[in-house]
Length: 341
Image: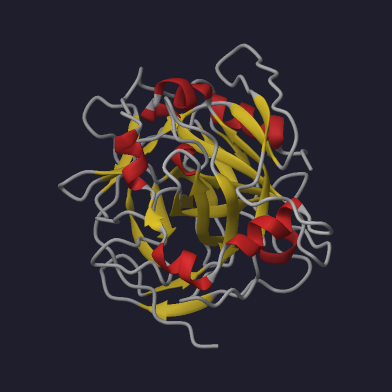
């Protein structure tokens, strides 16, 4: 299989809005179980856009929805941030000591990482990671198909993915996304690790209720594949870092889909994050475009996996990408979903 070069990018920043709520992707009546606190969650059951067919699981229905044409014409999800009337809320800051969850190597087969020479003064080589992939989902509010980026994260369940909040829920006035799938190491239509359908979608209530960009982060629990393999066992999983300083050397792997990119292959950006003005966010001037929403910002990336220290949320006209600052609440929500299967 041919893997094109990862291309060098120049700028990145991220502004994220975190919310805490969890949705079971399947059929059945909605359920709600709100819990108080900064990392409160709400659990609800959703339905597929397609009528249930005898013998097909919810995962199969979601996977079957995505024809080549639907994937080709899906829209970059950054427009959903504007539709949600997203706003920056009260800024976040360190809320305790720096803490991390370690990454995990795959146990089923070796992760497929592809070294690609790139220009620039930071790194001569950056490898694509099988932990990073492209996300496809259907928005029931406008009836359109969308794309984001995401990354697998190590957890007890070995089934966890991280992305942006607006890649799982439409924010204030919106609904939960449907037919949500993750395609690791997507390569111009090739799917070397197959499709992983969402079972649970988790986002912060601050995003769901208020479109608060300080909480634009989500966790997704996926089904095992048709062979019964778990995602992290198959591709590996990144670690997670919270309460670190605003200044961190990171590698961002993403699938920007709007020009000058085409969304066909992983792009990368490396640099040192900074605090944008008085905002409690992290930023980097990568110029990544729509489709990169939900991409993982990795500390200590070793060409296979790293530690997620941010999630791509927004891009401004100056090419600055932003992520919410990862505080203790991000770890609290992780702990609440880490064992969910």
